[in-house]
Image (cartoon, helix red, strand yellow):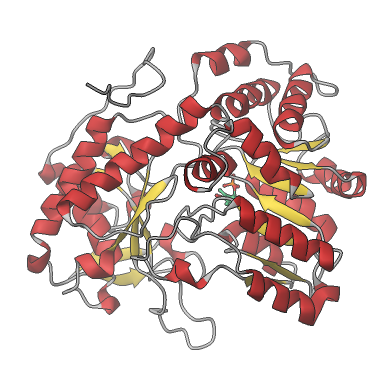
Length: 457
Ligand SMILES: *Cc1c(COP(=O)(O)O)cnc(C)c1O
């Protein structure tokens, strides 16, 4: 008999979870104005709100923390981190920052000026924010396939080379760099192929431009290249990472994702001029160059986390758990964005709660139902998140209305995945009884989803 796949770790420390009653959850979610961001974490049984900074560290990472060097300048932990990053990416220059958006802030302060155009695949919201706040423009050149949730293609996160080439042909002088997000978070954690990274490099070279990878989930991306792209099945994850980064000039990183730590980020590049430019902003914004907003012990843990996550067993355990949950949803016929990506499942709420009108926010309604059903906290990536049109002040119903269920790294077991799937199935089975959603009673102008107050209809 073929042995089943199992986690590449065993558990040394546990944190108790408490299952609440349905009556308690009904009360709590009402007190939270039906906004899952307003729940307290002890009111949640399984937390799928985000995979950012929610992972569990290994015994090696905790051991490294005890060895952290808290020197203001020249910290040994910084050099451990820098050496690890250089080994994995080939980038010689490294600037630590307190998280990913801080890396964007520091590097873009040097590179992005008013009127600039920054093309790429889908820009993450903080990336877009750091471009637009400088009165520059983020142009999304993702392949059209990404818009169809049911289409099964292996690299739905790719940049469309024709769209990219068009931006450069028309506006090359305004483009400071191209940015490729690996994996493409906004398109559902969808990977970008090596072939596509090569094509982007070739277009960049043709126009004399540089390329940045927004690398929060670069290890997940390399796992998908290994399992889906011809010629990579026998390569190690570290070899694949090295090749991916060989097509880039630099990277910004949110270490809260594939760095396997709870807080942190960095910039890395092969170009001294970018390093010199970013240095000037690191010191006032983040701190001195050998800590940049991080504790010595946290840099030490990150160095180990990066090394550990770029080993096949670690990343395979992670992705296979997400795929395990997706297979359960397939079994129950619950529609989600296909094929499942690396860090989350995006349930197509419009298709599940097809009786709930758009104006009553189906994905938010599904998130509330799932929480009441089993204490599972997901996150609406849909019409509430989309905010209102800045000119007409109308809600924006043009995009997708999804319930995102993120899987924290090394935190839950597959039994928890079974609970999530069963809870969703129970809601799915009574979907025709759910005909009304929620209405907004209070909201802010921008990023309303964090604080919006809702009432059930
Ligand atoms: C999380 C994330 C960021 C921002 O990083 P923070 O650490 O949350 O500041 C940027 N880009 C991508 C793709 C991300 O997933």
